[in-house]
Length: 565
Image (cartoon, rainbow, N blue to C red; front, side, top):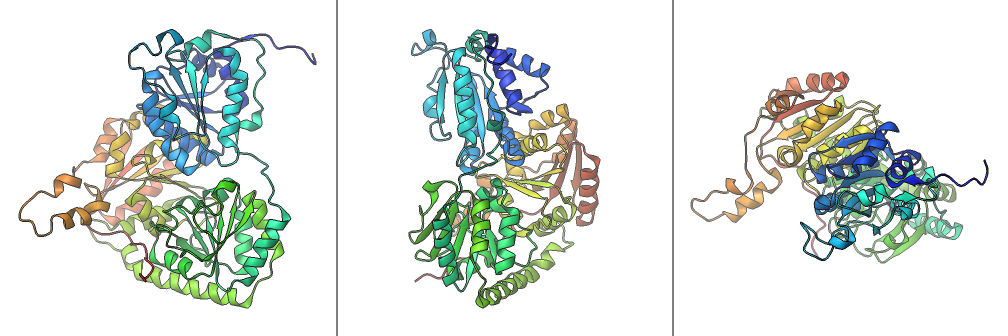
């Protein structure tokens, strides 16, 4: 009946029904948190993924959120709250929408040396938008909705709810007297964003019209806004080269003639060089931090900038001469396209940029096609690129995995996605499992080094238990390859010593290890075997790990540095 007050509901049932209303299909957790709520979730069809560490649970929720556009949920009891907080760093840095729930000590146990009690709010302060204490069940309708609202609004980031009771049981047992469920729209990234004002679009168009050699630099914010078609239209209609941060990869196909690669510290040489040569850089959904600007040197300080972002706090933060466009990146790029007319110099500039990129691609082609053993990582990347389906999701770890995949692994199809660690080594494997849960119809391939995979290899059991059909590719070089030259340089001039103790380990046969967990394991040493193994594994739609033996000494591409002086 209209106006009828809903019957009171237990806290456990309210949380479960709220998650269902918000479109939460999976929750990722470590025991013991919200156990009665988890029972209610089963009845409502929500999948409950028990992980083997709190950080894994957070990474799974992160991958789920990034690929689906829905708010990811991770949970841990009071004792695991610190571990869960550590797992939110990557989601915070990447700007992924998560809600983290933890239990906390009951009021009469706090500040009395209770077992493993530490204040949770300081732990979450630097990795969330907000950390909110939930003391009573009657607060749930307000604070649960607010957590999801904040997680997805503006610049998305995690939000933390600290629930009364070691595992939240005080809230679960409590009564919600007026159980109004949250607005379902809060469970996803916003469909509608604030519109950039016409005056800002006009100012950006005037600035673009004055440029001879403009370039677009696209970040994760453009991907979140679904601006792929709009960016492509602007680039093609005006002949403007497109560079990306790692988070902006796949905004256009990496093989497109206007694509000049990633830019910054994880860049192949052409990307940095061309962005540095540009006389106008248009940032779209990119925070222009130290990584995508090669420590604020690409572009050079003083270069003309247009910055389009939903988060006004990011505009002009790192470059002073910035024309601000504050609003939805998708709408702003479309409006900018309508407001400009191409200049003849732009087509000449685009042709020049394509030539620079083409020369570099020809230079590295022999390594991509090499039959050498141990296998070159360039060949490994080529085989993954060739095997990844048109709707595939590639999930890459940080460090060398990020550099190799950003520079050597093509993503030529508009339906492909690229998720990368924002700095947390070991993130990729759990995140790939979460991504597969968030996009069950899409093939997911995880690219990880052996050093990163060691962090959370126990999640092989989780993968087998839930039959999550991720194909994990291990670049197995028995060490941390990225730091090998630096370690060697510190031993220069010394006699003897053991540099290998600093960054070498193994060798480990991860294929055999995977089989012990019940996951199909394939070890590849001959480059000719990798392509068929990848295609068969992806087509099988089951858990598979492919352990690829490579050498630690070859170097990934070095980022181009501007001349000094």
